[in-house]
Length: 126
Image 1 (tube, one colour):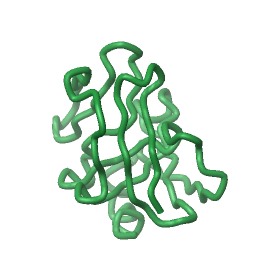
Image 2 (cartoon, rainbow, N blue to C red):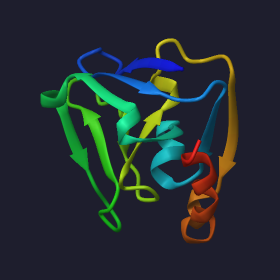
Image 3 (cartoon, rainbow, N blue to C red):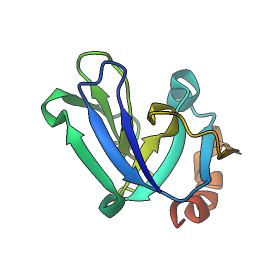
Image 4 (tube, rainbow, N blue to C red):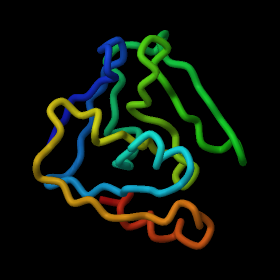
């Protein structure tokens, strides 16, 4: 299934190919819990930035592996490079237009990332 998405102001837009229904992770780590990010991890080959590369800025912390990309205009983080799968793209399912009604949301214990990270592998391979 092909999905379209964007940041809040629309300056950054993307397309992603993912199975239907979506299976996403709801992480409780410090950044995801505050932002309400629902993780849809896909290979880079199934993600396409339609517009807005020049409007993206990056934030890193802790290990520096994850590259959190934000829209410079509205501050929304529609996708990023995840620490668990730096070769892939992690899309915020809440930034898909429209948000899919057929979606399974699974909890992920990001506060205990090292112990929980192996469980992400099954979600990213779909």
